[in-house]
Amino acid sequence: MQLRYSFRLYPTSGQQAALAKAFGCARVVFNDAVRARHDAYQAGSPVPKAAELSRLLITRAKKTAERWWLAEVSAVVLQQALRDAEQAFRNFFDSLAGKRKGRRMGAPRFKTRRDVRQSIRFTANARWSTTSGGKLRLPKIGDVAVKWSRVLVGKPSSVTVIKDVAGRYFASFVVDTDPEAITDAAPEIGVDLGLKHFVVLSDGTKVTAPKFLRRAEKKLKRAQQALSRKEKGSKNRDKARQRLARAHARVADARRDFHHQLSTRLIRENQAVAVEDLAVSGLARTRLAKSVHDAGWSGFVAMLEYKAVLYGRKVVRIGRFEPTSQVCSHCGVKDGPKPLHVRVWQCEACGVWLDRDINAAVNIAKAAGLAVTACGAHVRPPEFGG
Ligand SMILES: [Zn+2]
Image (tube, rainbow, N blue to C red; front, side):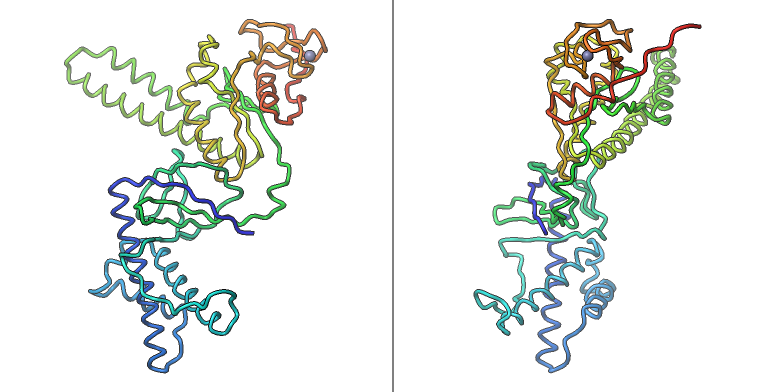
């Protein structure tokens, strides 16, 4: 089963120019293909094969004075234009032979720049992708802003970029869905922003920032200290400032990479992901230690959300109306706040030992209505002694 999803695109003026070029090149290749078939028909020679047309109208054409500019757009876009021409002829002949229902189709006509709808198609071969910032990365076009407005069920196999008569741009994704894949009950998970760890999952997994990020953060700290020691107005201060700027950039890159990897993993492995909405809980929360991570959190949640759209998953934000450390995730009893240093405690009502972070993650998942099991929050009683 194939599904189609359209999302509004907001290309920059430079990207609009690149798209205009790609629309134009695709149109030229389409028209060349129509002409080649028409000429063959007129001459009574056999219809040229697809591979032959590709060699002639794309590969060789790029080396000519008339068509050299075809090299400036993605080759996949040109291949797809050839496919479109082929399909148009197939529909026409099927229609002539009575194989198609409905209105008789005319012979494929030439496209013009005055057509109300311009389009190009990128298949998986074109290596289009989405960026960590939720943009659509198109070869030879750039990273285009997208408004992800609904849930996309499954992984898209191709994307068509369309400019309509009103000058608006859209990305239309084709998704091959296997109905079973949608209904299969992949696990659901709650994600809590950790204190010592970046996140803690309701299944008990604690995810720490990777080494490369911690190293970059350490370097940033040293660069900050070095700058503060330098005399104002000195040459060394300028150098130290540059080093600091570079360290900042490296931390930002490393953090983005890490968020990218983790969000992809969570979305791939789970049908639904519940996270806490810090925008809501920010007021109520005075836990300073966590605020260190806060800046990264909103970016991370944004990644989860757009990837959920791409993979047909669900991300639920819950506000922390209920302080999650005060409720036992096993029996639901609210037994009051606990000081920060208390990492593990025993529920007075049901006797289960709870890990602070995991308990919070399970409560987040439950608040979102996810069917997680609470067993992840259970821990063995702490060991004393030494
Ligand atoms: Zn309990």
